[in-house]
Image 1 (cartoon, rainbow, N blue to C red):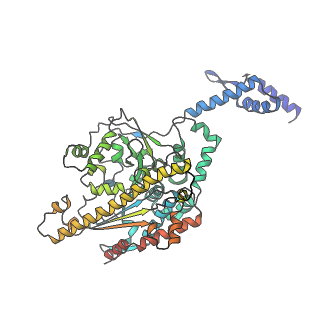
Image 2: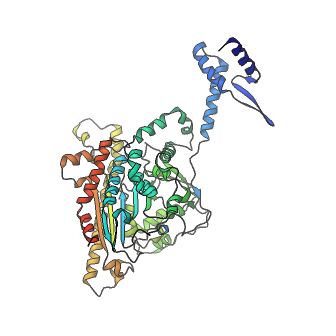
Image 3: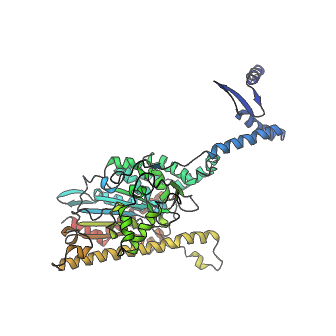
Amino acid sequence: MTERGRENLTKQDEAVPRFAGFVWTCEPGAVRMKPDLNVAVTSVKDAANDGPHPMRRLAVQFLLAWTLFLGGCAHYPLNAPLARAAPEAGYRFNNLSHANNSDSLFVVLAFSGGGTRAAALSYGVLEELAKTEIVWEGERRRLLDEVDLISSVSGGSFTAAYYALYGDRIFCDFESSFLKRNVQGRLLALYSSPVNWVRLASPKFSRIDMAAEYYDRLLFGRHTFHDLLAQGRRPFLMINATDMSLGSRFEFTQDQFDLLCSDLSSFPLGRAVAASSAFPILLSPLTLRNYAGSCDSPEPDWIKSALSDASASMRRRNQALEARAYLDSTNRPFIHLLDGGLADDLGLRGPLEGIVTRENAGRGMPWFQVDQIRKVVLVVVNASVAPDEGVDRREKSPGLREVAEAAGRVPISRYSFETVELFKETVEKWQREINQRRQSTHAPASAASGSGAGKSLLDELQFYPIEVNFDALSDETERKFFKKLPTSFKLPPETVDRLRAVAARLLRQSENYQRLLRDLNR
């Protein structure tokens, strides 16, 4: 800069009143004093070159305080209150069209947790279902088109939500947009960036909120559950998280949000997926506001019935007590949600409870209210892995990290095992009841099923429980490879491809899947 330029710049600066890192700004009707960013930045440089200066230090300190103050204003997006209770409105199973989906064939997919490993495995199952043509009720269609419900947790929720929102587009760009992207590295970069420290300094904005924003930018384009409802087509999406206080499953459906007097329609899909995958410590809980009591919504009849019926099962009573806990907004004004895998790492409990407690219509799972049902297909995509046995080969006591990982992994693995066993036992019980009914022409319909389902349910209903699980791999080397994969959001592209391929193979080799295809194409 020339000497004359410096003189002109000095004269311009002198025309603006300044004082120790502040600048007066003359605005219409007001004169304000704001932090002078130029002086503050210059002060930092001068302090490094010329040594400390009291006024310069003051300017830097003020700028820091001002920045932290602005960061303290950051707030997570609030879930919207529900102005008036409308039991028939909102994102519910019955509000989705089934024009291209037959009621007689009911297909449910359950996608487990497990980071990118789970997302890729569930994606491979979708690919195989899309390639499988069936002839049902005289019409030729893909088996994927018959999917009525997808229940998911954690890593599986990314695949489930993307397919529910975009349909077949998932086969065009999900691979490059998510499966083969270093999502974990990007999240860490966001958390460690000084630009974001200001927002993260706020007590009302945390890592999970930043992750939700990233997921929206990366995958969901700020779409909400209203957009799923507006599409009006199945599958119905059930994203599951875990209530931190109750330890119970929390599903992102309007039936669940009714208990909070909250409107799910405006809730972003990215936030629901973030809650479902908010593993403790790595990510903070996602917070919802509880507006219960503000929308003139009476206690659901199914809760009253379960708690007043002496013959109700303990499972049903427990569900009612958990649901009633949300109605107390005085003691529970906020609901904090963690990774859905903590309550159910398979994404299977929701559909299973919907069948087992089929009198519980208030939960939005009208499984056996459709008289035309003839076949129920339940595909569980289980991406669970083997425990780390390395610590058992060392005398040295496991470290804090290993203990923390085991504390989270062991209960989840045991609970998942029990869920699968309950699933199998329940289906076997139903099949026995149906067989007994077929052998007895005099037994009333309600005695065999516990519901007034009628002939279509008792005389024709068939179940096809299918599990896609690494344990079904016969090759020990291959099985160990998949069961040792990490639970993270970063996998090599070739590993993603192997997961997709093995998912399709495991589905095809399932005996019940083969039986299903034979029965459908008769």
